[in-house]
Length: 493
Ligand SMILES: Nc1ncnc2c1ncn2[C@@H]1O[C@H](COP(=O)(O)OP(=O)(O)OP(=O)(O)O)[C@@H](O)[C@H]1O
Image 1 (spheres, rainbow, N blue to C red):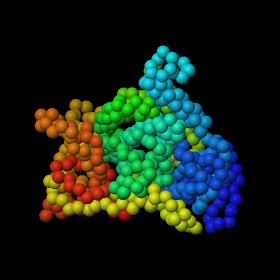
Image 2: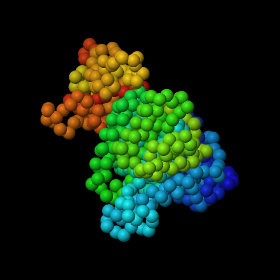
Image 3: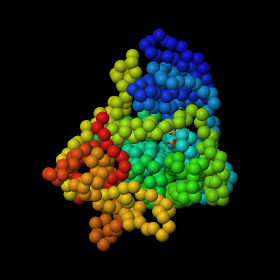
Image 4: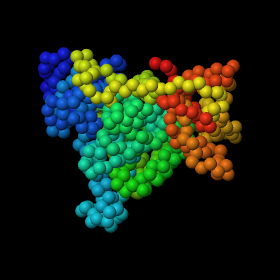
C-alpha cells in the first residue's frame, strides 16, 4: 500500500494491495469522494464502477476492499487507515456455500439434475440465513456483503433482505422491521440509508435502485420495551415474506438473509427473563423465515448456545468479526435516527468535498430534495393509537400476584386534545387499510397485523379549533385511516 498526492486540490491516490481494505470514518459535516483509477474495489460487497466518483457523508464509517489490488483516488478523508487483516475470505466462503444451496434449490425446482455434492437424496432448500451477534459486531455489514455478492453472482438472484432491528431504520425510519427483495447491490453512502435507498416521493427517474420495502411498525429502538409485540411483528413479517416467495421460484431460490438486533445475543448482565425473551425472539425468526443457516458473528458463548439449540436441525456457523467495525455510541445512534427521519421527509444531500463540483460527481442519488406536505386536519379525521401502556415494564417484572390493567398488545385510542396523548411532535406510522371489510371478521388486535404504508409527523395541535397539523411525504387524505404512535419524536431541522 502507498499514498501519494497527485497534485490536485485535496486529492490523494492510494494503491491498495490485494485483499486489503482502506477504512475510513467521517466527522460530522465532512464528506468523502472516492474514485477507482485502476483495478477493482468494493464497499461491503457492492462494486465501485471505474472512473466514477462515489460520495460518502453524514458520519459514514466504511471500508473499500479489493480482492486483486487497485488504485483509488480520495478527497478529504477524516480518520483513515489500511488493513490487510480482513475476514473477507471467511465471508466469501459463506457466500459460496449459500450460492451452492441456491443453485441446487433452483435445479431441483426445475427438475434438472442436481449439481454434484453430498446429500443428493435430501430435498435441496435455498439458504434462509439468520445473522446473530453482539452490539457492533458487524451483523448488518455481513448481511450486506452476503446480499451484495448474491446479486452480483450473475444468476439474476434477488435475495430477500430482512431487517428485524428496529434501531437500524433500514430503508424506512427507525422503529420498523422490514423486508425487501434486493435486485442490485446495496450502497453505503450514509448511515441514514444503511441498506441503500428506498423508493421516495421523488420522480422515479431520479433513483436508480429504488426498493419498496414491506414494513411493520414496532415504534421503539429497544426490544426490551415490548418483546411480545416484537415477536408478533416478526411472525407477521415472516408470513408475508413466505407468501410472496411461494409464488416466485427464482426469488425463493435466492433465499433470505435476516439481520437481527444485538439484544438477540446474550450480554453479561442478562437475567433469566431477558434470556427467555431473547431466545423466544430468535425462535420467532427461525420459525417465521424457516431459517436453515445460523451465522454467529464473533461470539463464542452465543455460538455454543445456538449449536446446542439448533445444530440438530440446521447449520450453525461462527464467523469472524472484522477488526474494522466501529463502536457506535448512543449519541451517534441518536444522531443517525434524527438524520433518518429527516431524510424520510426531506431527502438527503451529500455535498462533494472541497475541490470537487457537483457536476463532476453527477449522481442524483447524492442529491435528493423531497418536498413534504404539511396539512391541517380536524381531530377525528385520523385515529391515533398507542400499543400497550406508555411505559411498560415486562409482565415478569410485575410484583407477584399483580396483573396489568392494560396488556402489552392492547391498542389504546389517543385523544389529541388530552395533554398526555404524547402526540405533539410524535412520529406516527400510517397503517395500511385492512383488506377485509366484513365487520364480523374484525378483531381487537387487528392493527398489530397491518403493515405500514407511510410515516407522518404531528407538528402542531390546536385544541380550541380541534385541528392538527400533519407533515407527510406527499399530499393526500387520511380520512378513516389509523396511525400508531411509538417513542420517536420529530424535530424540525
Ligand atoms: N471493515 C470495516 N471498516 C470500517 N467500518 C466498518 C467495517 N465494517 C463495519 N463498519 C462500520 O461499523 C459500524 C457498525 O457495523 P454494523 O452496523 O455492521 O454492526 P452491527 O453489529 O450490525 O451493529 P448493531 O450494534 O447496531 O447491531 C457501521 O458504521 C459500519 O459501516
